[in-house]
Image (cartoon, rainbow, N blue to C red; front, side, top):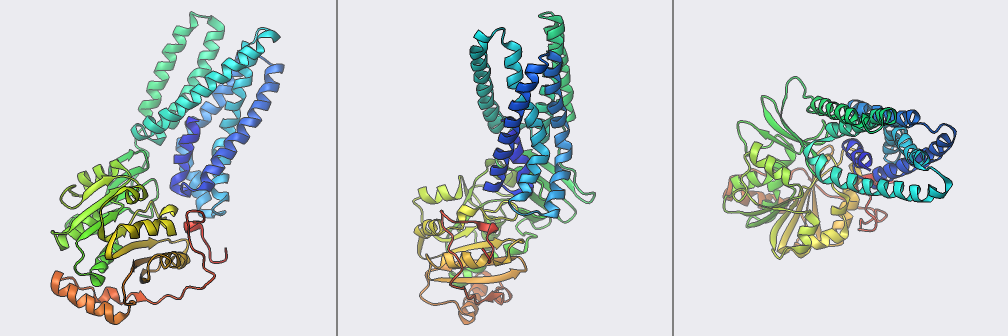
Length: 480
């Protein structure tokens, strides 16, 4: 189970955390274990020996020891060939996890055969072995998920799991040859091996020559990387080298290198008097810092899922909790359900890599957001999806089931800013121009060029509405 939990983190940076990833993981592990049980049972009856058992442990241990070194290359090849959202994680799982899981499945029937001294004791031995195995799986799952991943990281855990299997294999040989006295030697070798394994497990990310890594850590949710070059400091999640969570100019820390950030103040064009702001997704704190710079009197709350992201924002991106924003550590949707506060503007920027979480694009969630908006309040979000340029159509159609007006700003070939509200007037370029003049006079912001990216959108009646029941998110295609 530790390997399966680790597998989810190995696949996530390349294929996401979708139902296809978890379906692939569970199916491959179950298929491999089933095959392993069968082969292990037959082999145990034909050649019941400790040497064979040691070999069964050594092979997956050796494979898993190499896994941290090769999985990025394997995943990159599959990602670049792109066999589809369903096939990509399935192929990766088969290549990376089927063989070691097969051998691990063979261990239980082999141990039962070696431990059973007579037919009369097989039931008791089987029950004991599977009981211990199940308890071990539970403890392995909890220990890996709650402690090892946040503290050690993927590479180290891979070495640790593989090393434990190799050590157990050698211990099996020693114990079988020397009886109780051999266990001391086995323990000594085990300790030395584990020390070597842990010392070999260093940082798992190599930066490009022009950049340097300032910080790298596995949190409960992401593999967090902070990088820097002569221009900017960057925040990345997992091993996605093509996208940034934040990119701060070193000489002007309140400015972001990411273009969409400059379009976030568009909400002032719709409501120059906006005062209470909620930002969903903190990242490096770019949005709160920019808005605080524009108007220090703004009351800004921010919701961030991962406490380690807040720590990184404060340490590396000059974000000040309680000054630039009051940060709440929570899931965006849970916070929305529980808060009693009302806001003039809600900014949805809760991205991991290039995808918006599917549960934040549904009619039900938009209704929840609408319920914590003040009268005349606005919802604004950055919709970015390089794989599906048409995703804005079902999103806007879903928004229109909750709000009576939406405005789309086509800011990049693969990114839009969408503003939704319950204005009594439909958005027109003239209204936007009038609002931009007020904003320039009040805040000194020139939004005239930015409002030129507004475009009218015609949504076909066949476009679906995203709900909690049906929300494919980035997997949606127009021909679905």
